[in-house]
Image (cartoon, rainbow, N blue to C red):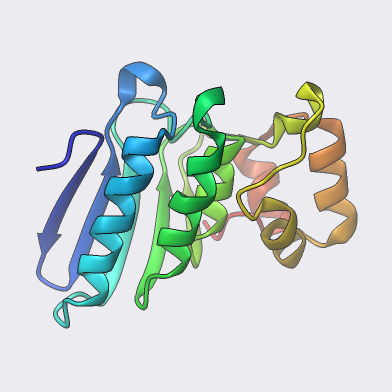
Length: 167
């Protein structure tokens, strides 16, 4: 019954798939609402012990649409509210709010070609979906500042080296 995500349960594993590949899996208000609903259901399902957050198509998430910036905090909050282990399976670029969504997970596993970036400062903005709090906890203050202030992407190998992704 969802339009922007897919939800599937296989035994103790729940899969939430961002499903707007034509839009780069950009987070919008509808997706945030659906993610909140799915996460609420997962928290009430005693059979689920692990949640895998993944994306359809070749991009994990390109961020959000400008009119939906407020929704990103809601989506990140939904993921961080999970009372289960949440793993982001990052199959492609995780940019802006897409990276913030991945940061809300307990672990991140990235495909070889994935890139990570918080481009907000390039637009005169600051990350708003928890990225400025979660990123330094993973990579340290200096590297987090570099990523936020430079707005430059890093590849999966660098993300692994600095501790942004686990594998």
